[in-house]
Amino acid sequence: MSEPAITLYRLQACPFCERVVRVLQEHGLEYRSRFIEPMHSERDVVKRLTGKRTVPAIVDENTGITMSESANIVEYLERTYGDEAQTANRGEA
Image (tube, rainbow, N blue to C red):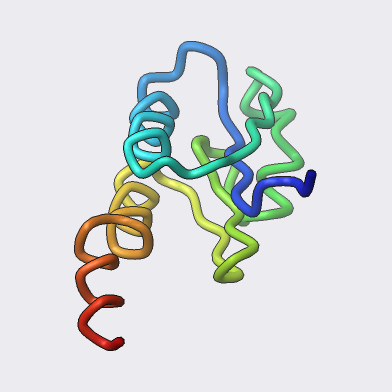
């Protein structure tokens, strides 16, 4: 079985991270969670990916997108995998 294309970098009990998790689940998207260091100064993994130490952050290997900020991630997921994306894809067929 292959690894999911989407990786979510998150913290335990982070409301912004949970918001992204809900959207991923609503769209039936498989993803892997990477829990990162709670200390902001030690979040080097996320900083290397996004240039910031904030979470949540995602990497979507399907599209090559890497981003942080929950509002941006939710908007991206809706646009890429949500109902609007499905309707647009059906319209092109």
